Structures are given as C-alpha cells and as structure tokens.
Image (cartoon, rainbow, N blue to C red; front, top):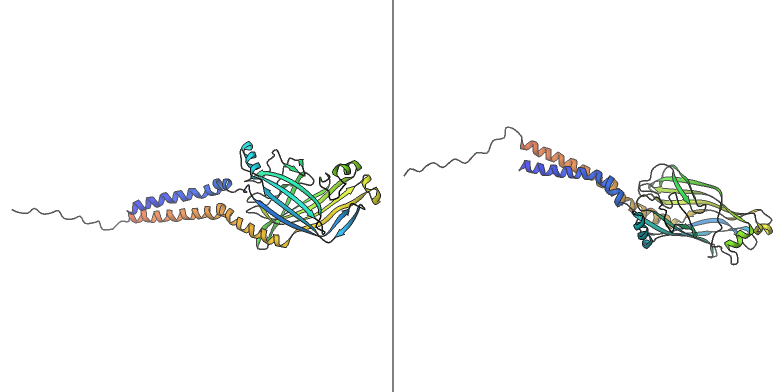
Amino acid sequence: MRRKAGLVLLAFAVFFTALSPLMRFYAFPRLAKIPPSQYQEMVLEVKPATLIDYGTMQPKKVDKLTIVQTLKGNVEESEKIEKKVGKDVVVWDALVHVVGPDGKMVSQIPERYIFDAHSSEPVNAKGEMVDGRAVKRDGIEFKWPFLTEKRDYQYYDARANKSAPIHYKGTRDFRGVEVYYFEQTVPWTEVEVPNTLPVKGITPDSVRKTGTKFWYTTVRRFWVEPTTGAPVYGEEIHKEEMRGGTLLEGSGRDKVTAFAGHAKIREDYIDYTVDLVKSQRVLVLLLTSYLPWGFLGLGAALLTLALVLEARSRRPGEPEAESAPEPEPVNA
C-alpha cells in the first residue's frame, strides 16, 4: 500500500511541477489581457491656466481648467478587427474634453486607439484616428505592457501625431505602491489646428487661411505600476502657441499663448485609481507568481512525501507477516 501511495504522490508531484512553468510562460501570456468593454474616466485640473481670448487675441489668466478624459471600449469594432488580424484586439474610443471656469467648452479632441489586448502594442487598422484624422501609431498610449520593464518605451503623442521615447527615470513609492517613473519631453512642434474651436465663426479652415500656425510642447510624466502596466498618476506641463499669419495682426505680436498650464489628476481620482490598480495587481500576480510558485512548492512537497513512503516500504529488518498454519489432518 505504501508503494502504491508513493507512486500516486509522485505522479501528482510531476504534474504540479510541470504546471508551474506552464502557468507562467504559457497560460499567463494568453489569459492576461485588457477586457474589450472597459470604461474609464479621469479628471485632471489645471490651476492656474493661461488661455487665449479669441476676441482680443491676447492671453488671459484663469483660476482653473478641468480636463475630462474618457476611455470607452468599443466591443463591436474590436470583434470586426480581430477577425481581420487574427488576434485579441481592444478598441478604445477616447475623448479629451477641456472646460473653462465658466463651464464652457475650451476644446475637445476625440481619438480611436486600437491595440493588442495582451502586449498593449498598437494595431494599425481602419478607423485609427485622432481628431477625425487618420493616423498610424508606432508607440504605446495610455497603458504600458503587463510586467513593465525598467527601460525606455516609444510613446505616442496624439497632439504632435508622432512617437518619441518616454524615459524610465527610476523606481519610486506612490502612496504605498511601488511604481516606475517615466518622463517624456516633446519639443516645440507644429501641430494641426483643432477641429473643434470654442468660438462661433472661427473654424479650422478660416484659421488656416490666415496663415496662423499652432505650435505645441509638453512635458509628460507617469507613475506606472509595473505588474499591471497601469499608470496610477500622471501630470502634463503643456504649452500651445499660435504663431504668425494675419490672425495675430491686431494683437501686435507674432506669437501668442493659446493654452498653458500644469495638469494634474484630481485627488479623488487618484484614490480611485490606486485602489483599482491594487485589485488588478493581485489578479496578475496569481498567474505570474502566486500560482506558479505555489504549484512548484506543492510539487516539491509531494515529491518529498513520495520518497519518504518509498523509503519506508523498503526499510530492512521489519518482521515478515506470519502465515497462517496449515490445518492438520484429522484421524478417522
């Protein structure tokens, strides 16, 4: 019986030991993915800010701007693209909506971001766009890959419509969460006129006809939880100018600040994001650490127990079981 039990334990030991690397290197890359129906909202504030007054074409100071950023998963579009590319795809319809202190719209820029559900790498497909213009991303946006590495990544800047390195700047603690800090600087770059402007009568075409150009620079900062690849906090030091053309003739300047300020995530959204990332981190760790190491430990324990039972079954010097005596013949 001991030998049979030892063989059974040995079989389970081999099974769980083999399951450990399979869980980490086979199951994890296939099971860990962004759900296609995810919805996320983030609110940032700029205190204070500089805005252009389109009536006087002069910059003015305002106490606060509110930036509402939404990411909405488009399941129908993701299913269509998955059939064409043959892999799991997420389609995020994003909108950045900026509101002034009076509650009126300052600007809004829609995006469609298409990316691999597992690796977060962009997937170039029909419908990919920024502000109504077709684009072709070659860098990540919004989210880093699972198990983010301590290295630079190519990060796509939607306003400049190009990717540039976002640099790993070290490991930090953010409200009890270990994070990787990344920073990207986009130098002054000529950009497209926004399709949505806050003043009636001024359209992108009318601005282009004046010869006035939009230029933009920013410093982008992210604190990324490396297990999930999700940013827990972000900031952006943003500046945009209008330069040249007849539109600025009455201002007495050859360039004027259209928008400037330091955008930071609002405090209540920081708490919400940190809690969400902590819960998602546990799910990823189940596949990458807890279960693989647990299975490996269980396999080692079962192997040890199987060897102990086998050794006991072969221990010398144990008395042999006495056989029952044969019955003696009965004399008639």
